[in-house]
Amino acid sequence: MTDNKHDRDHVVGNVDITRRTFLHKSLLTGGAVATGSAVGVFQTLSSMEIASAAMSEPFSFAWVSDTHLYPRELNQRFIDKTVRAFSEVQAMGDKFDFMVFGGDLAQLGHPVEIELGAELLQEVTIPKHFIPGEHDWYLDLGESWNKHFGETPWTFDHKGVRIIGVDSVGRAPDYWSARGMSNEERMAHMSGLDGSQAGPWSGLGSEQRQWLSSTLSDWPKDAPVIIFSHTPFYEYYPPWNFWIRDWREVQEILAPWQNVTNIHGHVHQPLYNEIGGMRSIGMLATSWPWPYAPEGVPALTRPMLRVDPGDHFDGVGWSNLTMNAEAHMEVEYMMWREQVFGVGRADSGTGDNVNQKLSPRISDRGWTGD
Amino acid sequence: MQSFKSKGLIALISALLCVSLAFVFMVNRASAHKVSHDADTLKAFNDAFMEQVILGDELFHGATMEGINMSNTGMACAMCHPFSSDVHPHEYPKFQEQMSEFATLRDMINWCIEKPNEGEIIDPDGEAMKALEAYIYWSNRGSVLDPGRH
Ligand SMILES: [Fe+2]
Ligand SMILES: [Fe+2]
Image (cartoon, rainbow over the protein chains, first blue to last red):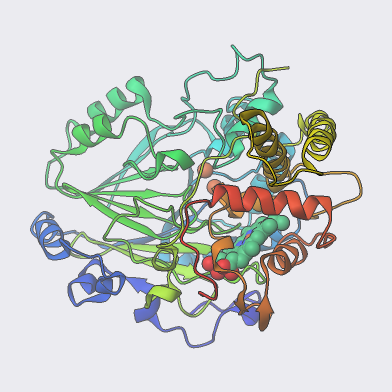
């Protein structure tokens, strides 16, 4: 499907679209039932079926996120994978109206990392839109990010869809000043998924929520909306900072619109959830995959197949998304392997963890700021 | 890597460890299990364990120690295994698909050091390995023992 040089090693030549593509309608024919927990699929999906007004003109776009670039000397792998994603997007460029970069371009928010990312991004010449991730932000509180990629939130209308990009990372309650943390320490505590110091950092915050309501206020309730955010718009396993703290308020704002699609990064894994008229879809990282949380994985999610840690191109990739003629979002995970989703319990990232109980870490709890 | 405070912490842990091990050693060696344990003794045992857990937690989250180099990619174990999830200590020993052989948890710790981390494997009976094992078991405590499971 793409003909670029990086494909040779890792993509099986004749890609089976039905295995790689996740259409909402395919769930109705039983695709999701493999998890054994897809109770409520029909009901929720049928409510989504009637919701949407038809589209004037379908379109596609690409999503890349979570490249987590280190300085060049330290880690070549993440660069290789970023380059591969961008050149694959570029090779399919005719198909895409734009690309979204969904945050976590850098690993520790260092200007060198962000500049490296900006340089690699030049490979992609179709229009690009950017939202930040927490790894881009907490060294200099967004200074380098905003300088290169502009401020968030933003909005534009495209072929009958209102498209919105929000900042769900940069408005954390201040956990650093009172503890006298340096900028590097602030970033280090933010950068671990399982840290205990940064608290519930993800959120839109009241100012941005207000912006969101007023941005949507003139938009017909049955017309489609796509919202890009770094983190998902619901509560998914708070101990790992996978969630957004003001999800209740955000969901309330979005509730009147019947066809909202929230595309998010940050979780480094396929996720799918529906809440009222909103569907939330989790994208792959290019850098590394995360295991599914021990609890709270939405029942509608088709978990991905276990990852081989010996192959750093495994379990990662980018996404090819299409708003189709029925105003439904189709997601094709451009994962650099043949099979994306697990089938049996022993294959999936969630099913085999039934015996696993986890505890929060302790060594960063008693940190006093010395 | 979260190593900004790690060197001092590790020195402290090592010091505490020596003291408490010495305590446990002196108090109990001759009389192990011959009289019942008082609260202080049990606390000393637990402290000796928790110090290893904390050291292991630090190593797992990217700190380093004299003489070892567990990563050359900038990545720490915790970046792929938050709370040490998906490490499955309760499933060992088992046939390990990645190695195509019957393996222990320690074998697989070293395999992940060598492959995803591109680091140098550590002494399977050394201090760092025991600490990693302590942290991994501690954070998975309560999991159902299920050896051999894939
Ligand atoms: Fe990320
Ligand atoms: Fe993130």
